[in-house]
Image (tube, rainbow, N blue to C red; front, side, top):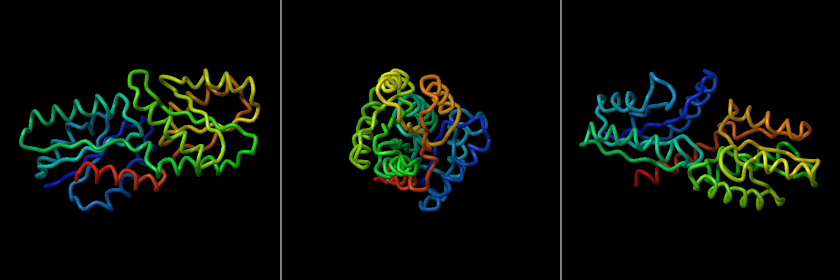
Length: 236
């Protein structure tokens, strides 16, 4: 039996986990698998191990693991594969596949474009897009550079990249921007607002309290198509 496990980081805020579950439901309704479950990396009662064991008890023999993450940083590159390896070692007759992340997919970029346009930045405004990034892995930065290039093309204006972790550091970029730009809009390139976006907001406010923030991706329903494509690619 084929099954799908959707793996998220998890939030300390219950309402954020509820929002995530509602988003995943939009995906599961479009898949034929009868066994589809959610696991969290930071939630002890719904770990990948527990959820995986439950799936196999129901008869799952092929499990596609879907990282509900934007970019291949620590969780997608190390943590999830390690958990999958542990499950595989305990159940060598079960086939496991891991899908790719979806932060650089067209639907995700289009959603970011819409968020920026919704903020109605003036023609002379500078756009700063801030992503999570990674100090240990290059792919998140490389993919975000491609995202920013596409945002430049879709918006018809220059978009600047900053990262919470790794380079280019968002505080350094913001400090350079504030010296020459009074009118700046910044977008958190995150699935939803939470502690990390709050941290970035505090850092931006220290540099320039007048800069305006756009909405984040907000688990937009259009992102579901990006996730579904990654599932298809993993299950071919």
